[in-house]
Amino acid sequence: MTSPNHTVLIVDDVPENLAYLHDALDESGYHVYVANSGEMALQVAHLMQPQVILMDAMMPGLDGFATCRRIKAAAETQHIPVIFMTGLTEVEHVTMAFDAGGVDYVTKPVRPAEVLARLRAHIQNATKMQQATSALDAFGQATIAILPQDKRLIWQTPLAKHYLQQYFGEWAAKEAGNSAPGLPPMIYQWLESCVQQFASGLPMQGLNVNQGNARLSMSVANTTEEQWVVVLREHSDDAQIEALGKLFQLTKRESEVLYWIVKGKTNKDVGEILGTSPRTINKHLEHVFQKLGVETRTAAASLVASKIKF
Image (tube, rainbow, N blue to C red):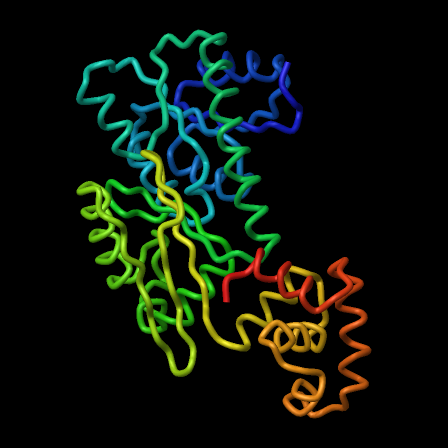
């Protein structure tokens, strides 16, 4: 029996197939949505956000392959794994399923036990990825994941999206009306170089983009066959102060005080920078130490250094 919170969307134009699978999955504890066409599947996937989609490959109108491509092209649904159901087992059709963005397939007539096993595996994987993304979001991390084969964007944290819009404004304006998530040409070209360097066993070089007094740096942090994780960091006083606030749950003024203390400034220096007295700075610092669970400047600086790279 699976968790009642697990949701699946079944897409098939044959009512009997929908009813058969619906009953089998419902009895196993899934919350089941159904769609009898590709167009309806797109609407349901967008509104209900199922954890996995069982997609009939051959349907009139918008077939399963085209539907899957559109699901993977939309930022709101690209993360949902799609398992194809098909009676076509020839290599070309299996290839079409994976090229469209599918993660797996089962052959018709479907066997409930096999479908349930595939669902459990892919929901588990999707849940782990979602938890990892949520954790990154919670800590204010700017991270994106791409497919190394074609450099296609898989997911991005909100802060990463903000940085891309901020540093590549002209590109972001053009992408605003495009449902398919993409990457700025500069980043795409950089990733192509990284792939070549990785294949040759060479260290992958980072990318830096300057904007006024601020700088955005990008580096590949993790590589697997399925995805590469890229970390984005903004280097500026304001960006680092904001990051400290999010990470340690500090007020803006507490973040400013901590930032300059980590930079080696005295209370008097920080007071002059922020336009207040050393005594006020000391009061803020007491609150900062309490929130960080430390007692000295050295301990605070060490903790910050272990969490954020200035």
